[in-house]
Image (cartoon, rainbow, N blue to C red; front, side, top):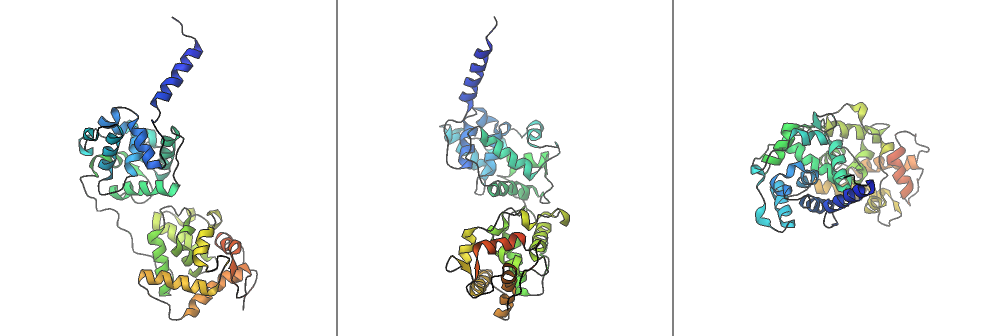
Length: 334
């Protein structure tokens, strides 16, 4: 018997709706639990065939995040005791891997980001900040010891889901910090930036040590030079591929306000206080004289043209971090 096209379409939509998540949560990690559980019994017996299960297992914290995720899925389905240990589950297959990878050789950070957002499309979000997804991918990179930002092969990626709950990994050994300046205090702040910035430098001006390091970094185009040094250290990639300051999101008003005392301007004294505060948290070393920090901040004053004691206003201050490497100083402040 022939079935009218509209009937087929209706049935398809009905089936699609029945496979969608049962409820919507407020965080992306919780939503992946719900979406995974809604996929049916396979979420318990063979979860690594389901994208929401794969990506959800990477965003959990704790000492055994994969197993914690599996328990959360079983709980969402109403039977916590049905959860399997990750060690006993079928391995993530090459076919599933190839559905995430674009070259079918490795899963890159970008492949992973795309996969997470795609898995959340069924529930229309909630979509996380990309830095949260990068952090999840870094957990796999560190455990598998594929830390060069060139991607993770199938066997190692699959091993994470089967063995990370029971097998410790030595992780990634960071190379020695590069020496970029002969001023110990600036070098220390630069190292704090290296230690805390996310893997691909996205939105680097949310990291306060990087803000201060960009100003004290040696050279005429100090902001771009600092970005390149951080990028090469964090990724091992060629310096020519480093991001430019002009492409970075602007320094936020919240970050500006955390340095300013009045919320309207950043003064030389604000900059000195912020510089010393960072070093206090890092255990020093401190500059031999505050005049060193004054000279660093003079770069910002010169470039923005705010030479008075009132300080530098937000928009001009933020512009310094985006544009000072491509535009020369307009004035020289006394």
